[in-house]
Length: 427
Image (tube, rainbow, N blue to C red; front, side):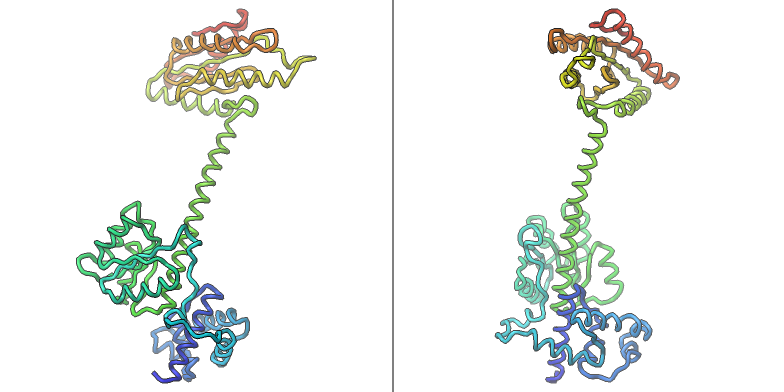
């Protein structure tokens, strides 16, 4: 390559790196060809370039080339065209290149800044899989210079073992390997729930469309063709790590939203004062329990409890004390009713409902007796608190109505109250 070619290559790499840094975009091979032709002063038309590269002239003139000059103009903050690109880029290189000696490795000169390890949890770990040691060493040198931790595997079996022991954030995978090719390695990774989220970038000398299609079909996220350019490898690595970081953040955000929705649903089903289930929750749960009892031929019991002689809200009374009493009684009932499927609800101002799936009136009567004893101990002022309790128990079927079931429990409650309270009535 002549001196002019070396200089053009340097400017070309500078331009690619500049576009990547300023616009987070890397050039396509066709854009590199257009830029390289302009930098070397070749008098080729877009029609000629399109013919050489196998693209339509319209696509090159109206899409690829305009995007290239727009990216350069955006990166340099000045108008860039085919005629002035070499002059402007050369001036920019002189202005921005420091006078200090260049790094010892020429590979680092064109490399974009890496995704810092602090951008992900811990140091970014990348697994390289290739049966050619020289390829492994080249990529290792490039990536380690950028601060990545690099693991190596010479074949697919070793790669799978390495991933099982220490999962990387990214895998660069060759396709043509003995015994197990890259396609098979990727398929096995994607079939395992513990490794299926690790992004796999194929790095291969295979350049046919079918090879690339198959790589994506088995779960690959990107494809780099050998011989690769360092700036492209680093750009694609960074791109996948950024995508992974965003996906992790999105999953965390979705988990938080899910928890928030569950909490909202819980709060929407609670009575604000007593912190037991509200009337809306009662209606929905009783209907669900009724349908389940019909389907499974189980008994269903409904209990209504009402406080007797509750005089905290009249003239000269203490409403705050009344609110506290209601809350205490609700929590006492909830403490007594501890079945995993039982539900305590505030049905009315002074009335609580208890839904007891798969329980009979005999079990409900034993529970009612325990409620009498526990609630009576919670004296408020000079008088103890007592309850009137109505119990209805049934084996429902499709010919019955749930409204009659509710009325039966309420009727028994009113009978208990009419008989002086502090008692239960069951059917």
